[in-house]
Length: 638
Image (cartoon, rainbow, N blue to C red; front, side):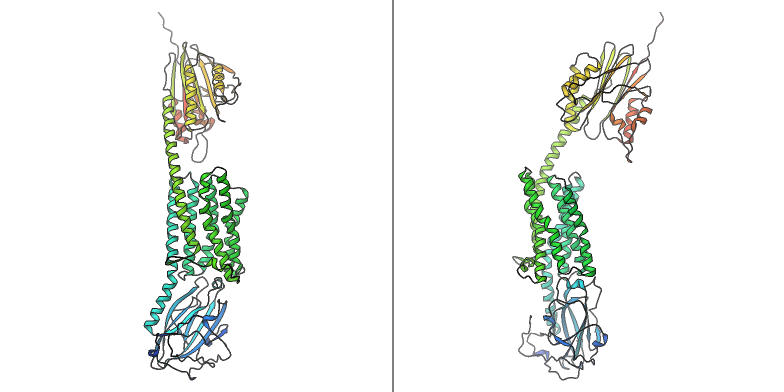
C-alpha cells in the first residue's frame, strides 16, 4: 500500500461507528503538516447496496465492515458505500480532498450534501481512476465523508481498483499533487498517441497512393491496415490512460483488432501475388465475426478474463502462419516475400504476447506478467504494441519504397513498350487505296491499349485483294504479330484466298504462345467474281445482309489446318463491308453489347459512320471497318 505521509505529526482522523459527527476526534492544525497533505485511505466503513440515507451524518454505520480504500484490490461490480469521519478543527474550515478513483462510478457526499464535480454515469462513460479535487467547507472543520459507488462490469475487465489514493491537504499542495498524478498518468500516453497518429497518416498516404495505382491492391490493404492499427491502438492507450471511457476499447478498439488482421492477411497475399485459399477465406470470415465477442462481453460480461485468451488465440495464426508462408514463397523464388517476413511478424505477435501477459495478470499466472509491461526506451515508456508498430512502419516503409521504385521502373518500361507498339501499329495501318473499278473506304479507331487489328489492300490484275484480321491479346506482343503478318502479306506472291490463309497459318503455328489470329481474305476480279476464305473471322456484309461463308480455324492453332473458299458475285454498285470484333463487342455503360443486329443494320453505311457509331456506343477494343464498292461500268457509244 502506497503512502505519502512525510510528517511525524499525526492528523486526528476518527472513524465514527455510529455516524454521529459529535464523537471525540483528535485534531491537528494543517500548518503542522510538514508535507501539507496526508493520505486518509484506511478506516473507511463499507457496505454493499444503495441507500441515499447512508450519506446522512446521523446514520448508524457501526455494523459496517472497515476497509482500506487503497488496499481493496480490483473493483467489484455493483453498488457500495464508504463512510469516514474526519475532524480537523475550527481553525481550518476549508480543506481540499484529492480523490483518485474511477471516473463516472462514484458520487461524493460531505455531511449529507452531495458535492458537485463527480457523478455516477452510464457504463459507456466509466473510465479508469482519474484525479479530482473537492473542497470540504465547514465552520467547525468536522466532515462526514460518504462515497457512493456503482461499478459496471465493463470497468472490472481491466482489474482497475475503485480508489487508487485519497488525500487530504491544503489547497496549494493538493493542487501540485493533482498535477503530479495527472502528469504521471498522461505522460505514459503521449508517445503512444504520437506513434499511432503517425500510423494513421501513413495509412491515409498509402490509400492515396492506391487511388493513383488501382492495379496494386497491396497498397489498398496496407493503407487499411496502417489506418486501422493506428485508430485501434490510438483508442486503447487514451482509454487506458483515462482520457477516454473504458467502453471505447471493447466497442471499437478490440473489434478493429480482428479487422486489421484481415487487412494484414489480404496485404500479405496481394504483396506476394498469391490468391487466398478456401481455408484462409473461412478464417477471415471468423475474424470478421469475432467482434461480436467483444460486444457480448461488454453487454453481459460472460467471457470475463478468458476474453483476452480468446482474442490472442484468434490473432495468433496471423502472427505465426503469415511469416511461415512468406518464408516458403521466398524459398520458391519470390525474393520480395523474404523482405516482408520480419515486418509481418511484429504487430500480430506483439498483440498476442500482450494478451497473454494481460491474461497472466488477470488469472494470477504471474510468470507471464512481464509480457504486458511497458518497454523503457530512454526516457520513454512504450507499450509492446506501440514499439512493434513503429518498427513495422519503418520496416514496411523501406520495403514499400523498394517495391514502389521497382513498380515505377516497370511501369515506365511498359509505357515505353506501349508507345513503341502504338508507333508500330500506326505505321502498319494502311490508308484507303483507290483501285480502278472499285471504291474503297477504311476506318481505324484504336482502343486505349494497343490491340491487334490489321488489314491489307492490294490491286491484282484489274481486281483487288483484301485481307483483314485481328490478333488476340494486347501490347507489344500483338503489335509484333501484326508486323509479322503484314510483312508476310507484302512479300507474298499472288495466291488464292484459301492459300493465303494456309500460308499465314503455317508461319504462325507454334509461335502464338496460346494466342490466335482471326483473318478473312477476299479477292474480287474486275468482272465482279469474288472468292472469300475465312479463318474464324466475322462474316462480311453485302448490301446490308450477312454473307454466309464457311469459317475455318483461326490462324496459329493447328499448323495443318485447311481453308475452303466461298464464291459470290459483286454486281456494279454493290458494297461489301468487312469489320473486326471491336464493332460487335462495343459495350455501353449498362453492359449491353452493340451486337450483330445493330452491326447488320448499319453495314451499308460509310466506313467512318459505322466506326463512329460503335465507338459512341462504348469502345472496348480496336475498331476497324473496310468497305469495298464495285463501281458501275459505263458503256460509251461511238
